[in-house]
Image (cartoon, rainbow over all chains, first blue to last red; front, side, top):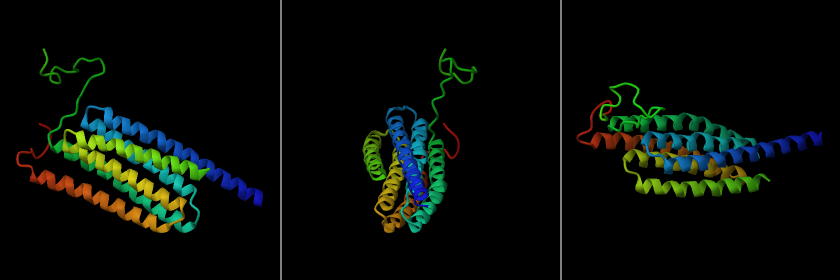
Amino acid sequence: MSQVADAINLARDLAGVALCAVAAVFAVAGTLGMLLQKDPYTRLQASSLVGTTAAFSVLLAALVTAPSAAIAARVVVIIAFFLISNPTTTHIIAKYAWNSGITPRATPRDGKPETPEAGDDDD
Amino acid sequence: MTAVAFSWTIWIFAACAMAMTLRLVIGPTTVDRLTTLAAVSAIVLAILTVSGAVGARPAFLDVALVYDIFGFLGILAIATYTRAARPGAPPEGPR
């Protein structure tokens, strides 16, 4: 019985450490994307990466290593509200950018415009 | 083991938030500043939640939930009122 409890605690610790590693990797990647990308929409996507993936991973790590049921219940409530509010925030910012008149930098894969209407200012 | 991992995660998140402040300063448009605000808000929420869960302090988690709600409402208010205050903005679609 005690061995089962020890195994469960070890599994919780390992899951917490793995989720923390995932969160750190995605946080660094999202920060680099926010600092290096050239399009406001691309930077918004990097910010959403930090918010959703990194913060959600570390919230899950806090959930699986929660020391008591009261803390676990609060973390579940925080995760539920975070999963609603963070994509909504990203959508609000994207809508704000679109209404502000910012056009996305559309670059086709082969470097040439796909239709004559898309590349109206060259040639 | 988990305490060390959570401590490293908190420091990495704090470093990321400080690096994002650079984008807040040099951001050419208001969209970049709103983007930075959303990301830093998520990072601060994660740090508060981890601090409460590691130290077994449930008050931190209540503060984190209210911080999340007010961060969302703050971004919503900024996006609404700065768009309403701009005189020459087109109503829909890109220029």
